Length: 306
Ligand SMILES: [Zn+2]
Image: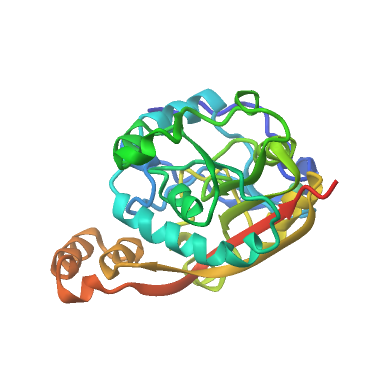
């Protein structure tokens, strides 16, 4: 699919600063001949293609200043491939471990909403943690098809729309590895705020572009991705919540645990070598283990304190 960029450069989608605060961050390295349904899949083999991005000097967000339209993004995710249902379980376990201390501060465990739920693996962890009402929003038909049958009833197909839910109705709203993908992350967290009950919490997981590994890899980091409309740092991820009214805002980096054959997918190696190594490792004794790595993923949270 060819994305027609909008013509005028937008203001910073986090703080609203104009083009005078923007400095070049990434050049446009898209190659339309290499864009496919797998380009918009979760946990895909990195392609190292990106839209042109600028960095906001005021808030530290890096963002695409001429993004595709919301409708075009929705279509891309609707049609995206999905091949990582097993890794979704490992990711959900890592998120659940990181979320533990935040849940201890939460009074109610009634209703939870996950924006970008994939196969709803994380909703199942929330059910185990005592949440009684679960709903997830997911645009990818293929991801929903890969969900176990008992989770499908929790999933609504489509992109997140505030109007689909009642105000003041959720104790917890999660959005993991999705805030980079939406055209307007500020609008998303502001909508979530209105949907939370007083005392409820929003929790996001983003990449930290200033994390050690991402800085070392530079343009060869998997975060350099055509899917990403913005890239946060730890500072700008917290700022997103503060600026949209949240209180008691916090954040922490955490470790992800995956099979070695999955980590191999992310390593910048020539494609042939990577495929050969993956074939050797997959299904071997080594691949039954889980390897924990801090790849610069960052959990941020904020409460509806008023
Ligand atoms: Zn900004």
